[in-house]
Amino acid sequence: MSEGPAPAAAAPAGGAAEEGAILEGTPVAPGLAVGEIYRKDQDLQRAAAQRVPPDAVERELNRFHEALRESRAQLEGLKLHLEGKVSADHVRILDTHLAYLKDTVFLSDVENLILNEQMSLEAAIAKVVADFDRIFRLVENSVLRERAVDLRDIGIRVLRNLGGAEGAEEPAPRERSRARDYIIAARELSIVDMFNLENDHVLGIVTETGGVTSHAAILARSMGIPTVTGVEGLLARVGDGESALLDASEGVLRMAPTEALLAQYRDTSPPANPSPPVIGEWAGEELSCADGTRVVLTASCGNLPEVSSALSVGVGSVGLYRTELMHFVGSEPPSIESLVAHYRAVIEEAQGGAVTFRLLHADSGLGLAYLHEHREANPALGLAGVRALLAREDVLRAQLAACLRVAGDSGQVRIAVPFVTDRAELLRVADLLAEESARLRRAGALFGTELELGAVIEVPLAALAASELAAAGDFLMVSFDALSQFVMAADRHGHALDHYFDVAHPAMLRLVREVVRSAARERRPLSMFGVGAVSPAHLPLLVGLGVEEFCVAPADLPGLAERVQSLDAHRARDLARRAMEAGGRDEVLDLLRR
Image (cartoon, rainbow, N blue to C red; front, side):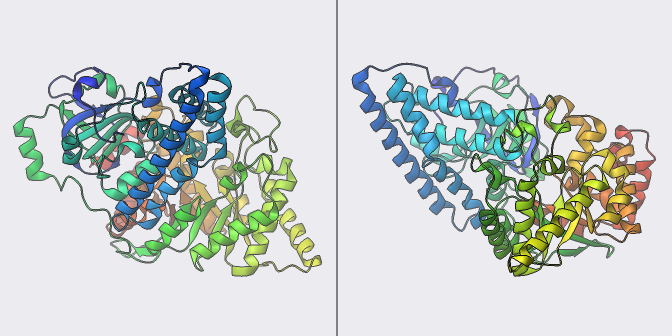
């Protein structure tokens, strides 16, 4: 089995980059790395579709289960290796991979292809992962995309453990593996490529694709591995064994760096692998900017490990808990009892902190047959969020009842209604909440009576009607990324339009200002969430517009806290005023640079 680089001769040729070439991408984990490029092409694409004779079927099955055992042992060893080096919740990311190695769907699909179609093991694994990958990527949902990436990682790991199999990679020299003197260049950011034979991490990672919020990205940041994604045409532009300098703080890969350039970086740059933030180095949720202005940070989570991670850095309040994961477990909607058990576990994990549960936000592209009969022509603009829930009230009532019951335990539960466009939708949810309260009262069940209900603003119509929504509910939340996408009519996941999201358009800032003012007039709390909301470009603008609460992914909480504490809100207000008066995004960027 090989976790380290293969000999240069065995790697695909690739295009050698010209001397001094500069390739740009998106920073994921800051830092500096200098070393040789090791190209890691997608293993699954190289698994040839071939058949085996009938008498070889049993051998293929035995190879499969042996590779599974070896893969489990590697992951368990990797967990032990990382204990004490990264936060415990980030180590638990590997539990997802261990679960996939025992997943009955994955195992049975591979075995059926071997038994019924006499496929070689390599081809069977590649086909199963490709099928899952295609299904997951058809839907516009980050959770399912993450599942696709995790499953691909597992397929690659198992393939690399097929010792002696035709087409398997040759083991890498252990000396090079131990030296960690290479920068991985890959098609996609992958946990399986982050470690060598000794479970030591590589110097740096640069990829063509991969999100900044993926499991691999979280682990890279936690371990301090300089990482850059989104380098267009990377594998066609770099060759195996070429020297490179990866400046992950700026999102730049410099090929064939000169000695003069290396000396310049050594003199001015921070250590190549900065230590990850010390867990607990700041505590509490309420912070003060440099001028004393108050800003509150709460956690944005979608599973129990993320809640635990937030608590480990002193944030117990979950300002946004995404409830979608429970609804993808089976072909039927989850029962009230299973929802209660999960929501109760979230509250217990938060250890007394307030929790805001966002109701199921699913459009027809997600393939939930019990919610949508068919895929709409444009799922993002169709029966999504509260629209879908009101069309299938039993699913909505189950979530409302579960929230009422767990609120009886803690009393600190809020319900956020997604994709609201009209106050009538919010009022209808409020009526159903009252009906479920009455039903629980008649049944003699313990439930909470102080739940707050609020609207998530993510479409322009809701932003324009913010005053009415604030008056009808108890709080407002703004999904900055979704609102930006709809306002600018630009796909957040389309690389050709990435520049639209570098900084908000002045018109977008003026729209956010009106939402903030509407909440203030109605004396309703307002919070904001989304990756773009807390970017270095947007944070000072939004604080300057009066946003006082941000819901943030746990891994980003310590870094964001430092940025908030160094921010001068008086200057931010002046900056926001000038940005709203600017003629376009370019002028706003110029203001930020100056």
